[in-house]
Length: 91
Image 1 (tube, rainbow, N blue to C red):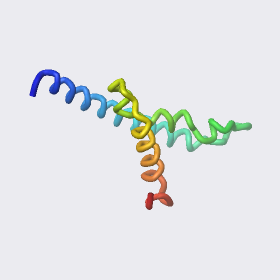
Image 2 (image 1 turned 30 degrees about the vertical axis):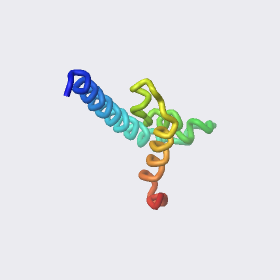
Image 3 (image 1 turned 90 degrees about the vertical axis):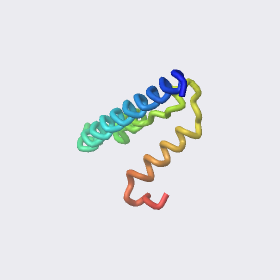
Image 4 (image 1 turned 180 degrees about the horizontal axis):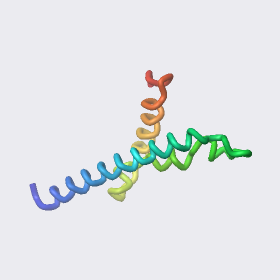
């Protein structure tokens, strides 16, 4: 294995760790936001759905590699929905 491959592997591990940390932080923020969601006098569509938190929980590896793939983002979104909804476990 050459130096480039080792550096690439380390970069992938660092990106995965950063993604997991961000997802954990986003999940904690989402739980906090869900507690007060819609509690403001006139909630907006975005604030009620907490779209900023949901969208910040998506970290496709292809973006960090400089070659974004739409299919990877679609994969992430679908699996976030299916894995986080008891009614949608059959996705």
